[in-house]
Image 1 (cartoon, rainbow, N blue to C red):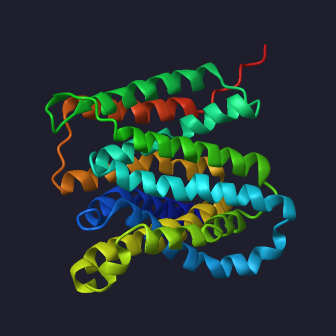
Image 2 (cartoon, rainbow, N blue to C red):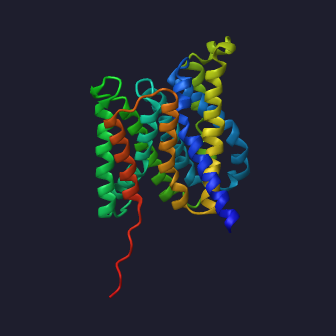
Image 3 (tube, one colour):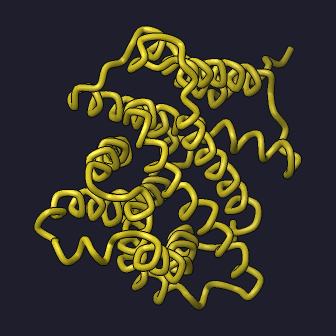
Length: 298
């Protein structure tokens, strides 16, 4: 049991490092690559890795699942993976990493709005605190050294909204499927879309003619696609299998910390109001996700 717990913690920390480093990798790739090029190449690489897993589990999928799985791929992968690079053309990687923590909030809002999920006072308090923190990050720009609305942060907020929608799609419509089957099909099914975008809507083909000039940027996207998407997802579901969903979800608190550390190491500056906003978001996520103790019986 002790070894099992140590293994689970090791996986959790590894996952936090992988997902927490995604914003800085996107930032580095953006030096020479187009945001749409990063998103489409990342998803194409992930599809190639996950294709064997899909082939192995394809028989598990029923006819009624195909549309939801495809929507899951678009909502949970295609759109967010383009929104993040677009956002990071203007905002820093630390801010992007912390804003990603809004995902549980939107999962709760969608669940309450469309799936009759009941929200507690604690959930609502966490939501309020988290969105106040988000307002600080959107309204305050360290680069401008003062209050300055930076709407590019809303692209990350939109991505977390889509993640929240996708989590509910999976929970309420695809719960009978193996998580690996869901992931592999939803990503592989959108391969035609990502290939079309990659070769016809981005400068990827011309960059291939001068590969040596883009080798580092392509390397960053390779890590994002193979490790940050495919392998990280498999680690996450393996973690759920070893422990439980609650334990695995604690990566939500660790990932932003990793993103902030990488941002600081890369020379990003975090002002006091930015730090305050980040702290509010993480505290709001903690409050909203913390389980309440049952009332004592008298």
